Image (cartoon, rainbow, N blue to C red; front, top):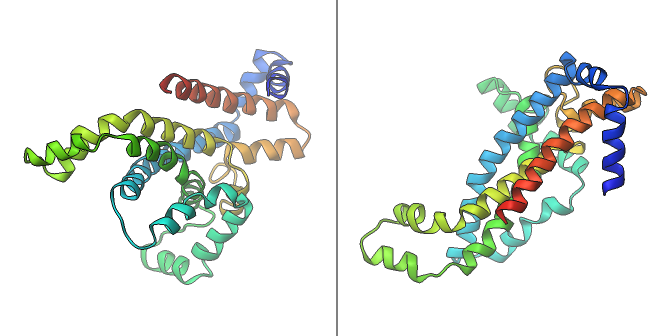
Length: 241
């Protein structure tokens, strides 16, 4: 792990700090980095809420198809990300019923636009929060929420004051892991976003374009930024754990 990471850092700074700074402050590079961080942040927030609620439902309730749902949650881990992009294009593309309805009725364009990026990242990052929170919920002492209910606390109040403080570190860990995963997503994004510079081009797609063009210094410089953010997130997760 250390050798490839070290090579990228060496390549990014080999020509000096001035070239590195020029590479990451190019308008196209800045736009790609900004879009990547924004889309990953939006996905992480949504995933944090929905993933926590899903984990709570899977642990606290019994219902038909629960085991099937629990199995399907891990499906994004196994599906190639290019297939994920294709699925979203078939579902939300302008040629589909749903995609055409959203575009004609609400003027919402999903594919080749930022909503498509968020949906792709949500699909890929959805299991992270659930699998981080679910084991903690299973180990939670059931007597604490039961005691709150017998004292007259409503369900949402019990979740907010009794359950959530116990699972908060796991939620934050899952959110950070999904955020880090979203930073490097390429396959699904290149299908649903269309690689439009300054609009839907994310940093991994930008790096791929620079590698294809033989501009390894520019590719390495942007890669260093992504690696630095990912390293900080990973250290944060380690501290929480």
